[in-house]
Image 1 (cartoon, rainbow, N blue to C red):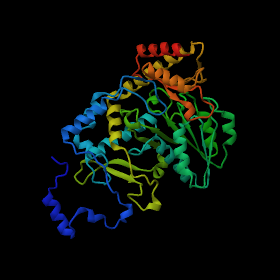
Image 2: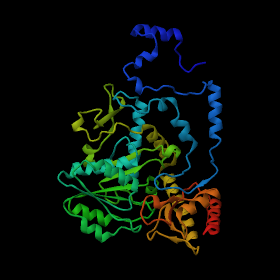
Image 3: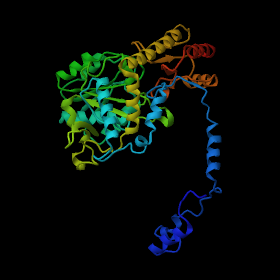
Length: 444
């Protein structure tokens, strides 16, 4: 059975209507020297044969390794109910409602998502999701430029995810903006150097807590210094950490951004993911994307509506706050179900499990003679180890022992050849961590 429903008779009728004899005539406008001479395709397969072939290919994947990888994407337990509910056809087949007449169920989910993100971050407003964590940070920087108007300087802390930094720099490349990225010499900020940079030319300072190295700091003093010259504070964080750490509101940040992969979404294909962007209410008109609100219809029934739609798809391009027309409603739906299942107490327990597991492994590794811990500050669920061999050699040897041991930092930073970022989530058992320790002892 062919994959196309069109019979030869159907095809002939269509060709007759447009006045040609063969399909290849559709490409007469393409010069002959530019046309493909042959596709060299294999013989067609039936549906069953294709399915069987894909099964054989999938069996080549090695899913037995224990992952201690992090750096922005994390291996968390996902309750089965997240899959069961998010894969319902009414959600799964209509997850990007671009028009105001989108289904009430989808809009309600996004409204609940916004409510939960505001509660989690302490911010007063959030949109219905962004593309990913990196673009959410870049959009936050653009917000700061619009709000600051004549201010043309942005300071980014060295502890921010380096991929997010690159994305933000790319976004700002065609703006008359100076982007200052502080040096990554340690896991701690050089507070005095930063304070010396803060003046009335600064639009914002972007920081991440926990930072990319997993270290925790209190930025409240720096935020106060920023506000004293009317500059904005943009805080990025790993959402799971907000179960025990200070929220953006408690740090008095003006804008919050982050990546939502850890909220009920899998690691497949480098994602899937979604971006979180929230702010104080007074900045809501500069918030890109869409905001779902609640009202009553003409019959007095509760209704959900797209209240603000400040994207170029909805308004004049020169008035838009963002030119990204993609959002991640399906991923945001999964995050909503995930947070609803955990509840406030469960979310706090999840955060504590991550914290306790990571600190157990960190403390045990610190006891080894040839291992140094790069982090000087307290950590959440990631930390950096310094080893006596190259990080590539270490990672390869650990992989042979069935571990993805961590992220090689030499690919992201200069002079970090012997440093590996290790991540520990609630999914890692004590037996797995103890086996990890045994393998490290054998290697170093």
